[in-house]
Structure formats: structure tokens, C-alpha cells
Length: 443
Image (cartoon, rainbow, N blue to C red):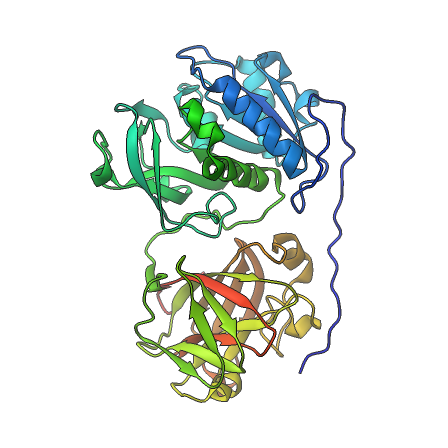
């Protein structure tokens, strides 16, 4: 059914500069040639876990394909030196650690695409520097005693949290923050305040988040107070994913996300029906994986006319699937093909039938698509926004398609949604299908 034309993405690899970390034995996709600076100067409380954190990030760099330098010298914050780095990690910094010239150099660095990673007390830093407060996302207010708590993982596609289950039980020093970053940043994980003592954020307690900020990428995690954190494989993977996002080695949708409700939350397929052959298998970690087909798992519980649909998806290799919208209720999967539209998942097809396309009708912007797309084995996030007859597609937060229907037989104003199981050998997984209904018209 498909003509295979391999689409290649140019990958520019910067030359490694001399530093204090050696090249990796094996590297993560997209990380080769990247360089990270770990900054751990303190002008207030000093965490005794800082050396463990520095060592952990260096080890992550050695195995993950990026070079790591570490310093406590604020003199490293010059325009020329910062240009050497793809991200700066503020590792439990405290107090006022940069002077005005150094602050200006760092602002310029972020404005030109530099990445930021804040770990734990990075939120207890530079209270009088508004740019930094916005970049970090929130300032520290207080903390109770070190204790176990349950972390609710809100985004399971971001590389910092994709390895986790819906909840994450761990022990740390849990910060309360002066403000809630949810309206400005994309929350990856939050604390269940009922699972521990001393939370003060009224039940909405973000603890890790990401955002694009004034030209750069930012990731913050409130974990990392204890030495034990940096020996914990799950926390180390959390840090690695945050760093990979910040340096641009992995893509993610870090726009604020509020007002969505689940259509599939990983536990129940209530309201969903399988049309045609094949099936989807639901695993213990809340992932749906396709097999056989050509079939369609569609949401029969409700039709939709104006909405933002978000879902996370991953391919195992050169696999084929898609997300269907705007079709009438039917247990024949070809009804969706003939009466709706498919947003394609298949990175090695012709332009109008490849990932991000409105299948058979309009190609995605392939340059933007290629830059936004994570490779097989990594999670991606689609937003499919339907308003009137307009259908727009975002991949990992980047708009890659804008299509307007003119066929009355395929009207988008009232229809169902579904995910395709394409056929034998096509293995595509989905998570966290959620929706937000929108006004009929809008930007």
C-alpha cells in the first residue's frame, strides 16, 4: 500500500573541545558533539550531595554522548565561554552567584538558544534576578524533613519521565515553591501531598517541569537533595532525559498544558471499540501497542467537533499507523479512511503519506517535521487541533501542518477519533490520549 522513500535528516555534529570528560563508548541519538557545563557555586546553604551530582552528570555524559565540564567559578559566564556549551546545569546553586555582567552574558546565551537545567536548590538562587526566576520556573519557599513521597508522573513522553510509571515513589527533600509554574511551564511530575507531611501548595504541587523560555530550553527538577539520589538509576535517567531535552538531543512538547481530560489514561478502554481485524494490547505500564490489521481502535463514547487532541506515540522501527479524526461511527475501519482524515505515523513514505501528513492530501512541513521528530524507540507527542474545517498538527510542540477541509463528505465539524493498527509487522505504541474541547473558531 505504500511507496517507501527514505527521508534523511541532516545531523550536524560539532567538534569536541578539550574538556574534563572523555568521549563515550556508546551514545544517545543526537547527543554526539554536545557539551554541558555544570555550575555548582553556592552563596548560601551548601548541599553535601554536590560532588555526587557532579560525578553523576559526568558519568551520564560519558555514556550518553556529550562532554561535561564542571566549575564553581562564576568567571566562566562570559559570552565567549558560554558559546562553547549547549546547556548549563545549575546544580544546587544557592544565593547570588553571578554579578551583573555574568547575568547579562547568560541571558544573551539563552536568547541565542542555550539550554538550562536546574537541579534542586537551583530554585534557591538569584531571587532578585527576574530573568532567572522565569527560567527556573519557580523560587524555593520552604521544605519539610527528608521523607518518602509519591510523585505523580503527568507527562510520560518527555525523555525525563518516559521511563517512569504513572507514579514514582522515592525519598528526597521536597521543596515548596513560592508560586505554581503550571500556567507558564509544562509540568512533567507533581507531588501527591497526601503521601507525605509538609506540602503547602494546596494539592497542586509541581516538582519537575520544562519550558521554552526566551529562545532557550529549560528543564527543572526539585529532586536531588540527597547523595543517594545520584546513585538511583531512575533519578539518573530523569536527569539524563532533562539534559538531553535541554541540549536539543531529544524533542518534547514543553508548552503549558491545562484543561485536558483523558480518553485513555492507561488503565481502562471504556468507550473504545475495535473495528476490523487485528488488535491493541494494553501493557501493565499503560501502553497500547498495535498488532495485525488493517483495523482501528476508535472512541465510540462521544463525537467531537472542535477540540485539541493530544496523544503520545512511539514506533519500534519502520512502522505504520495513524490517528483518524472526523469520521462517522462505524465498525468498518474503511469508513474512517473514506469519510475522515488520517494524521499519519510513518517516517519513510512519500511526503503526502509520511509522519505528520494529512494522509493522501497534504504533506507536513518536512524540514520542521524532521527537526521535531524523535527516532524509533523514543516517544513523540502529537497535538491535533480541529476547529471548524481547519485541522492543524503539532509534533513535539512544533506546528508541522495546517490543512483546511473543503469536502462536505469529510466534514470535521462532528466526528469520532481513532488510532490505527495498520497490519502485520507494524508495531506502534500509544499512551495518554487526552482531549480539550475548544470554541468553534480560534487561532
